[in-house]
Length: 287
Image (tube, rainbow, N blue to C red; front, side, top):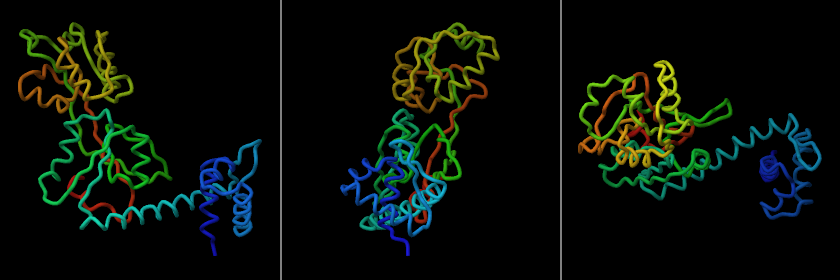
């Protein structure tokens, strides 16, 4: 029978790529760890590592074993994460991760259906995409909100649900005379603030102005939607932004939607993990 202690030691060493670091991480002697790996290789009848200088590199059998080990221990983590929530009656907590740069209005729109329900708690934490994906895989959050769909392959266990698409517009302070200008005139005459080059919005915007043969005057680039909202309120020119980001300002008249940008939209994703026991509260917020 498979010795799961030996398999876990192998799994840790494979991810660390170094016997010394792995031994320090799990607080056992390096020689003892080597013996456990050797015993596992003996049981499986295949070498799992080969040395390349000071590094341990997985053999073909080692890569296969690691794929199985990842699945086995992920299932174990899911078991602990799921049963660990049974102290909360009927699993009444939804843990949401959101990109730190994501529109606060969109985050609020996502959780609003739950806020009106009794005995349900919503926990929202923000962070980088990498950190939140790790939290999702470690069952620390149930869903990740993002305006970026992370790359995935056959071994990836997460699913990106496209849950909303928001148009992108030129937004600015009320100013007489702008309503008579064409889109090309607005883009060429007004100073602009907009998302950074890494944004999907910016990719579409750059393609649009290239088609129009316009060289826009960009005075600020911001990757944080909350900050972009503040800059849009203070800027005397125009901002390239989804209206949902500045919904409050549009409602109270501080800002107005000057023109829609044709073909530009921002897609919002809810990223979940393939789980045997998904949080049932997700059914209330996912399409």
